[in-house]
Image 1: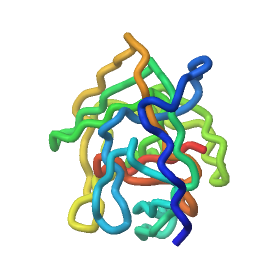
Image 2: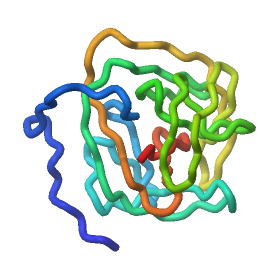
Image 3: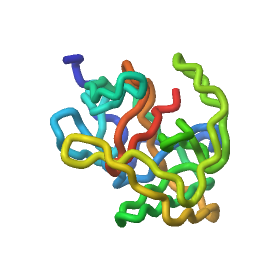
Image 4: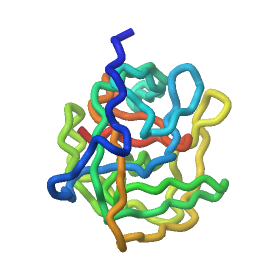
Length: 178
């Protein structure tokens, strides 16, 4: 297991020089699934934490190490409401795995990573995503998408997840967008 770096993402040690609008992120309180099965708030992750990830080619869950956690301020947020009551609040460009489409986002973006995903597909109400429950994925439908573009909000992103370049947040499979 890689060594953990000292936590350095407290509320007092980051001052943005200028907001960037090309980074995909999640709001505080979003729950990341660790390989141990525990959930941890995204703002509490540190480099070296081991998360549960998913190999979309082999359909196997795997352990992946966090190599970078970033903090930004964004105002281009969306809230995905799922038919099982789960919600995810993230930037409108963050890719989520959609059954039958692959990596998709509310505002399409070009994902430049080792998987060569390229342009994400358009995510829509009614799309089905992978929802983690009882050590497997089930399908869950997006019942509503709400745009929230009114004020700058502090957001976090897990970048450089080893191996599969994805992780599970609020029990839904998402990309790490490197």
